[in-house]
Structures are given as structure tokens and as C-alpha cells.
Length: 124
Image 1 (tube, rainbow, N blue to C red):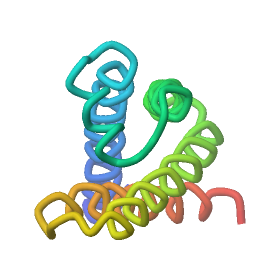
Image 2 (cartoon, rainbow, N blue to C red):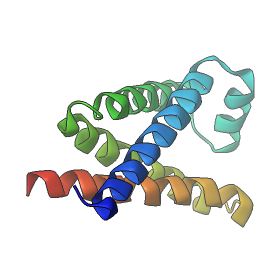
Image 3 (cartoon, rainbow, N blue to C red):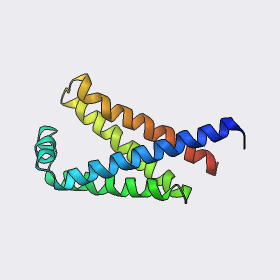
Image 4 (cartoon, rainbow, N blue to C red):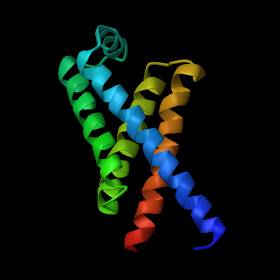
């Protein structure tokens, strides 16, 4: 293994861990935080959508962790999380959030999409 591919592997593993931890935390707060209830109301989303978001983010985070051993789970996780972040970005555009509030969903969408393409390369 060359040092370049080793560095890429290290970067990908770091991104996987970073996103997994982020989505696990966000998913948990979606389900159990009163502050998130207020945020979802501000985003004009209902309790069912909030709970679904939380569950999907928890599953995405778990699948990302599993992807370190079973890469196909990373393909599934990053596809779903990229789509979720795209929808979150669109919702924030729709309600005219400021750039500061738009930025996280956009960055997470890009990072998830980047990892999705890298997982996809394994299978094509």
C-alpha cells in the first residue's frame, strides 16, 4: 500500500467516524431533546417527521460505523444521509434561513455525498 492510498484510507476513516458520531448525536437529540422540538416546528415539520429524522440518522450513524468492517452498509448509509441532508438544505432554503443556518446541512450533504461516491467505487 502506498503512502497516498494509506492517507486516503485514513481520511476516509476519519470522515466515516466524524459523520457517524455527528449523525448519532443528531439522531438522539431529534428523539429526546425539547430544543429540537422547537427547531422542527420552526422548520415547519411535524412530530412524525422529527421522529423519522431521528431514527434514520441513528440508523445512518450505526451503518457508517459498521461500514468500517462491511463497506456495503456505508454505501446504503451515505446514500440515505446525503438525501436527508439535501432535503434539510432545501427545507432551510424554503423558509429562508440565513447562510449560517444553511451551511451545516450543505457541508454534511457534501461530505456524505463524497463518501457515497467512494463507497460506490468499491462496487463499480
